[in-house]
Image (cartoon, rainbow, N blue to C red):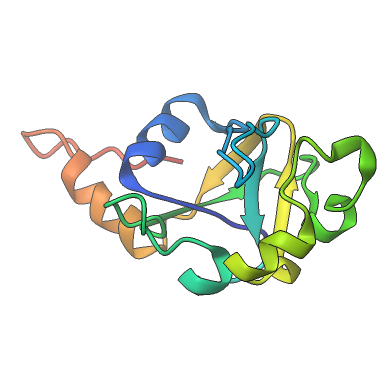
Length: 142
C-alpha cells in the first residue's frame, strides 16, 4: 500500500524546499483549532469528494502535486485515532467528518514527515518544465 499527500502548487513549493510535510492546523466546526496534523490517503487517483479536497474554500487545485512518505515515517490510519479521547481536541471526530468525505482512506501524522515527490504525477511533470533554467541546463529534482 502506498500513501499519498496531495497538495496545491503553493504548498508543494514549501514541501520541496524543506523535504517534509509539516502538520498544519485546520479550523473545526466548533470554532476551535485542532492540534497540527497532516493528512494522507491510500487513493492512487484522488477522489476530491472522498478526500475532502473540493477546493470550496480555496481556489487552487489541491490534487495538483503528490508526495509519498519516506520509509519509516509515522503516519497512521485516521480511524485508528479519530475517537481516541486523548486526541479529542486534535482531530475532527469520525462521526462528524464522514459528511466531508471517506475517512476509511485517510491517514494522519502529528509529526513532520520526510517525503519524496512523485515526479510521475502530472503536476510535478509540468513543474519540471517550468523549473528548468535558461541555457539548457536541465536539473531534475530527486
